[in-house]
Image 1 (cartoon, rainbow, N blue to C red):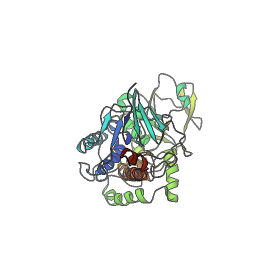
Image 2 (cartoon, rainbow, N blue to C red):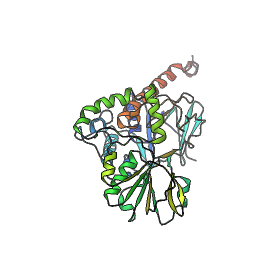
Image 3 (cartoon, rainbow, N blue to C red):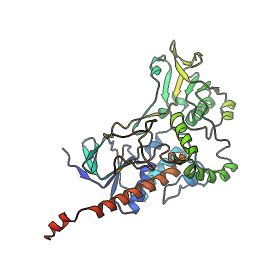
Image 4 (cartoon, rainbow, N blue to C red):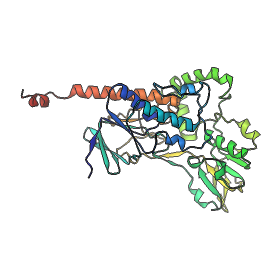
Length: 379
């Protein structure tokens, strides 16, 4: 048996949300460690498809204390964001332990025990910053197993580029921004492409245009202070984004049409004779299917009676879990605002959670009884 280590705060996940919390705890002089399953900081970005670029400009893609090293109005690639996060952790000497896959969090007295294989760490505070990949499972409908085995199937989490697909038509299932981006890339690579799913809307301007440079500061304000769980418009947006995906951002309906993508506003509902079938009964003869159908929450490794919202996400307020003092979440879609899923929001949410941890630890010190200390002093 390995001896149990003790750390005041354990942050699970070394992406942008976890690093932001760590930065603010470091500034306050509070001890902590960051556990990350990846071999390198930033690998969660390196594992995405190479042509992916952020949907926000570099001027808001930096974490606290270190601007993103690119022209203000440029849009970084996933690889550039990965390298930035690695440099960020090194610059501020944040204590990240890579290659550590956390498999359990349990209550232990007034605190918690975090387990990772044979390692055990006792902590007063645990911050879950795993994002949407490390502890969430890709959603693929049950009928996917009934498709003809000659059809190549990929989930968007595993998509890296058109070269993974075999020659012939491609069905993209799920028409939020990831589905739109992949459909455009696949169609431009020469595949007849069908995009299936409900219309999630679209941003009504080119996010890389001169107009966007004027509009984006206003959007950033709205996404952080107006479209929040505290407002009716924010609560409506939260339900839509968590259950149906976000609107088209960089790629627009006109772009898809110009590339020859066939857009069908019905869902893929089943299989007939080994081929995918739409809800209107149409059967599609395709060689490939890419499932852009999101992820299923998996919090079973947190061995606590977590209260969840109807969409399966844990109940919390600005990242604080009231029913389990010392437990926090960051990096969730709509943790508090639309911006929570952006780098911009990671900094804001991380600051709030770190501040709560600092205040909590200061209160615990002030509330400790004097008797044990007096006895040790012989009083």
